[in-house]
Image (cartoon, rainbow, N blue to C red):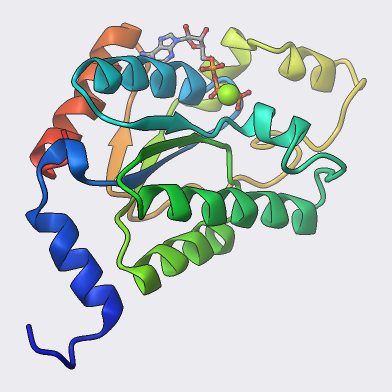
Length: 198
Ligand SMILES: Nc1ncnc2c1ncn2[C@@H]1O[C@H](COP(=O)(O)OP(=O)(O)OP(=O)(O)O)[C@@H](O)[C@H]1O
Ligand SMILES: [Mg+2]
């Protein structure tokens, strides 16, 4: 590492040398509606806070009520929503916060843009695919969206009649089928530990 090392590389190196509690990172949970993103994010957040981490959850639904109020569900608006969340996440993560983002983020290029922004700043970004099959998501149907879509009362449901581009090379793919919430959350926590983040 020399004086000519790019700022992003120096930031990344300094971050890696820090203790797990001091290291910021964005942990993006992508997956279909009812896959378990929000549930896992809050379970992980509670555990991390307990362990002394600074944690923020940027939940897709909450963001759409405030930061992204007025945006719809077109491809363009979904992209804008994801890049806005990515922008805020990077700022927080650069300051030592563990940012958990349970947000569908259906398009690969939107997620890539967020990854790029983090890489340029030397901030850690982990993409976690909550890979619950659509059939199980539709059975869970936490918000009743799958039923509404099936009844013809709603269209543009991600993974059903709107695209979901599953990540091809996420940092971690998590199964929730046949697993208790605590088990999946523990798997996620173990992964962060492996990465020196927990
Ligand atoms: N192993 C598991 N991990 C996470 N959730 C699970 C698991 N097993 C069952 N569930 C249940 O699945 C449901 C997931 O709902 P949740 O709101 O977390 O989904 P979501 O991915 O955030 O959906 P949306 O995109 O609509 O916000 C919850 O009722 C949760 O209790
Ligand atoms: Mg959710």
